[in-house]
Amino acid sequence: MRGSDVYTTVEIAFEESILGCRKEITVQHEEICPCSNEENRTDNCTICNNTGKVLKKFIYDISIPRGIFSGQVLKIKGKGNVGINGGENGDLVINIQVKQKKGFARTGQDVVYYMTISFPQAVLGAVINVPTAYGTVNCEIPAGIKPGEQLCLAGYFFKNC
Image 1 (cartoon, rainbow, N blue to C red):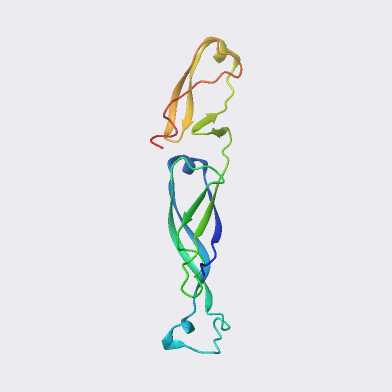
Image 2 (image 1 turned 30 degrees about the vertical axis):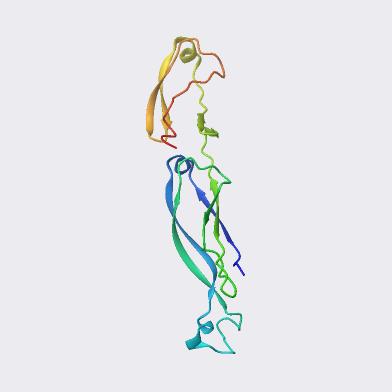
């Protein structure tokens, strides 16, 4: 019988969701108790209380892909609880949670940065610094921009996603 899946949650920064990252995670899942092999067979195991399984900690280095959303799930096959009677192991299921970043929001693969400009900047135009995942870039605000109007900076957040 197949082993059950093991579930965990990993929280990543907003920038990490854009650029991708690696995370080291520690999880616990069931493994076969040493008493279950032929050499160590016993009918009175104090390690597993005769269940044949023990809970062990494992450390995994996982790769989180660029462009991942909060709530998306990564699966690592065979890294869940041990199977029964020769069944395959369950999977490790990782729920990704992305921390919010003040002033930023995501809509699909678009990143929206909200900022307030002064009245003179709106009337006369200006060049302002805009933070991106790859550093700060200059953005030209055209003269006469209207309240709520959006400007597009293509390619400054998701590259080759």
